[in-house]
Length: 347
Image (cartoon, rainbow, N blue to C red; front, side, top):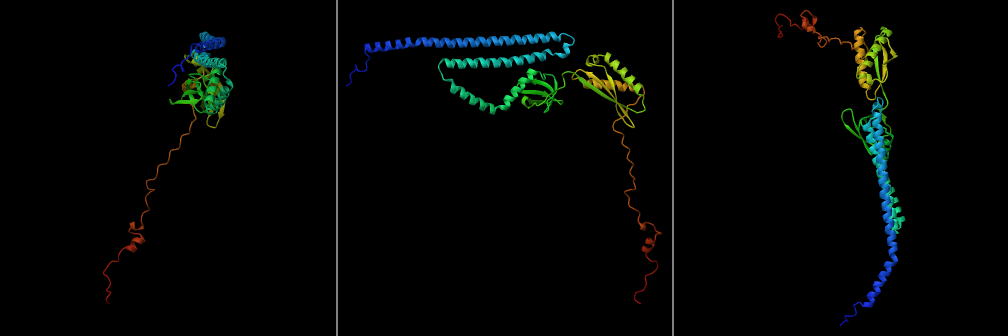
């Protein structure tokens, strides 16, 4: 039988182990306290810095919105600045900047915390670098779309409500995202265009537009009289609402653009608000047509009328009369049977 006292711990051994543990704690408590304080300090500084940057970005966005609203209250600012569009753009920029700042600050703080535990960060950083390169190659289209969207928003190339031509599609901008831009086409369809696929953009809602109308009349008309009629129409249109706001310049007669044997073309142009050129063209064309009709001047041009086709001859499909239809024709006489009895063939 085994001795029961062999597995028991003596009082001296227990005291020795307790003394060793106390000594180990006494030797390492300073290191633990130092490490804990370093980690706490890193976290506190990271969160305070993140909070300060986010608050600064929020104030910057609010200041941008207040300046846009102040300019919108003026007569010219209402035409040049859209407060809602400015607000959306500033919020999008602020959201991107806040996300980038949080990622950088918290990522740096996490690496510093791992370094406080004396963890070798070289393999971790090398692995992260390799993974980043692999993800970059695999998701390069996504990264391209994201970066293109960020720069489009920063540069304010277009916004919600603008009419744009993006090359691959055209229409009115419904939504501007960091990866995809939504366009509504002329027939109501929605186009989802990746920002990285947009190589060039034509914004039809910025600056000003030009309304052009061609008036084609007979070459014998008096040009001075036509010019006077067009100027009278322009003066009346500049005084009527809402055309007095949509016209950003006088309606001008640019002169003759084409002179033919049967017609001559006069070009009329006006500078208008962006996106209102088609409506202004229709109104100018309407007023000029009515004024020329009242003056007895006829507008010509277009596709010339086609000559009427000659009526088909009803007898063209009929065949020529037969020679046997006339009883006096030689053919009819030769075909007539001989008169009298038949000859006696027995003789």
